[in-house]
Image 1 (cartoon, helix red, strand yellow):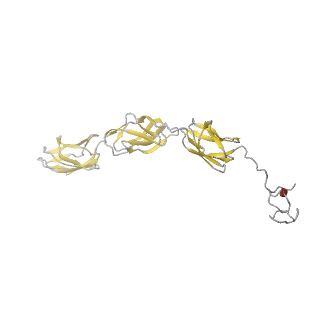
Image 2 (cartoon, rainbow, N blue to C red):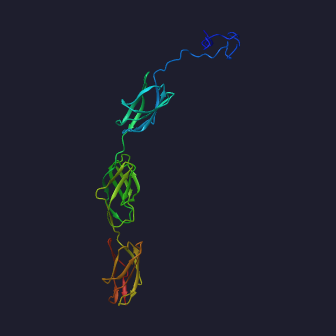
Image 3 (cartoon, helix red, strand yellow):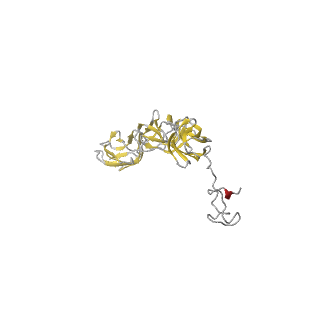
Length: 299
């Protein structure tokens, strides 16, 4: 029997016969195109993919299961755990589900319909990121000018930002295992102990003991003028670095009206009364002391 005879009109050939055109649909022999009858029943469902193919072990995310013959689905399983069905494609090509919780790892996803259970496709559960821990920072001290290279040890440090009293360290690099990182301390903090925080997308922690900033010893380059009357009262300027918070003595007697510019490089004061002759000038800060070369001469 030819295909043209399996038609909806009983397979009657057109008047043109088997080999010539006939009436109706222009099919060899006439009639209509062949249509199988009766229709074939749906078979076992076929899965093609789960997208996305991974998600958190806590579940709760929406996953689209794609395949063929998914009509009349009665259940979707992730590693044996039922998923919640949200919606079904009327053509049987996809099902939207809420992934159930499951231990980390790869599991098979299957769909069950009234015609059976599908082949499995893989879905990977990922463990949630763990918050960081910090055990120590080395060294634990450095100057207020910053620039101290440090190493911090702990766990789950990947993607970490390190903050010194809220000021980020620079050049932070984490090893592949996430157990150690290196960086450089920031500048601009006052002497004393500060809190060191480690922050990652999964949480934050504090380094035990923090970090102690130490004052930088002052450096002085000269005093202008370098002479003045023994009665004192001469305004003077001392240039240098690290002069913030400094006190000045001339011949062991404290100078007065001391002010320092915000950069710590310029100090202004007034000489005290003194003894004729050359006297030492000493600048003292929390970081130490420095003597002005040539001192100050009372006349």
